[in-house]
Image (cartoon, rainbow, N blue to C red; front, side, top):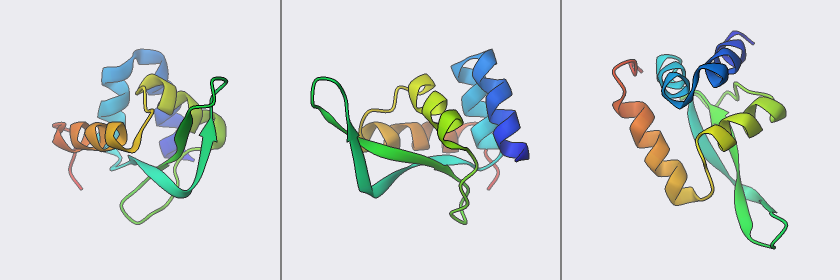
Length: 94
């Protein structure tokens, strides 16, 4: 996946580059409604996907996990804030 390769490269460059690459590719984190996980303390966190506007997933599990960590996604509200940041980026052209 070309988009996934771009995302992996951006992860090494920092959060700003990651946001730019996601915006450039029209890829947004999305909460997967029917699933969630829990951390060691028992807190429930949603499961996320990285998708294009047509719903195509653009990252495998490992890359998605790295993106979630890099963007510090922990909640649906946090996901919405990141989505807005990506869509407000100059590189967004979807």
